[in-house]
Amino acid sequence: MAEPVRVRGLTDREGQKLQQIVRRGSSNSVRYRRAMMLPASAGGNRVPVIAQLVRADEDTVREVIHRCNEIGLACLDPRWAGDRPRLLTPEDEDFVVATATTRPTKLGRPFTRWPIRKLAAFLRRVHGRVIRIGREALRCLLLRRGITYFHGCYSIGDDRLWGVNRRRKGSANSLSALKSIRAARSDGAPIHIILDNLSAHTGADIRRRAKKNKVELCFTPTYASWANPIEAHFGPLRQFTLADSHHRSHPAQARALHRYLRRRNTNARHPDVLAARRKERARVRSEKGIRWGGRPLAA
Image 1 (cartoon, rainbow, N blue to C red):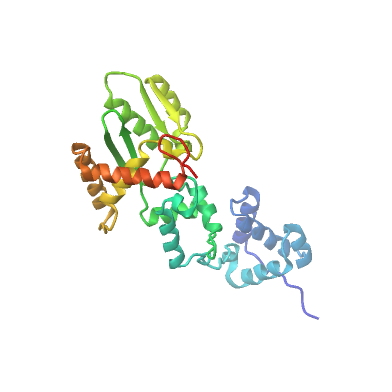
Image 2 (image 1 turned 135 degrees about the vertical axis):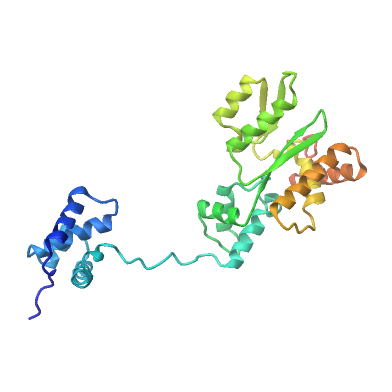
């Protein structure tokens, strides 16, 4: 008959170390439970009793005891099997980036930007190519691939467009834009700002500062971001800075973008700028089936 599995005789130092781990506890639950197995085995308890005590599988208890007999207290540290297997292929990552850089309206979604939550949900339902990725993993992927957002402001009265590239969209960036808009009108006159219902635009700090500085926040209705006048200027911005371009880096792209903004503000009535703006408005009207003034098109 085979002898029962039992830990070898523990030294005084090993016993004190195990007692210290059990008494003080450990942030690592695996290490804590393994530290309970060894004194229990040294006290004469059999494997089934120890497994019931620490709520573990009997094979796990046997493996820990055998490893302790071989390498000592180093058996308390688990042997992880390695990193999680890669779920997305390089082709899948390229597809995610291509989707993130495509306007949602072209893919049948009634909004103009891709929030992380909506992009992750859309990727799970793509016909013929389902990509399951969490929001945090998606955010890290886009950050690693250098996806940036243009945070733009447009003054209707001055016909002036300005903005900056951001790594992400957040309330801090929206608050910074609000400060720049208020600084542009130092006379203290009331200002009305048209913006969509993005959560980054509706923070308590933004509302508090807007109220304090005579700024009225005018939110567009749901799925009606086309009513925001700045939308007609995003088309020319892409056409003159991003279309058919291959910038070496994001700083080079940002420099090209700001060169266009300076030239556009200096020549706001240039025929090319006006033609690109009309083309963008016509595209928005055709996508929504709505006239620019708000009346629906005839059937």
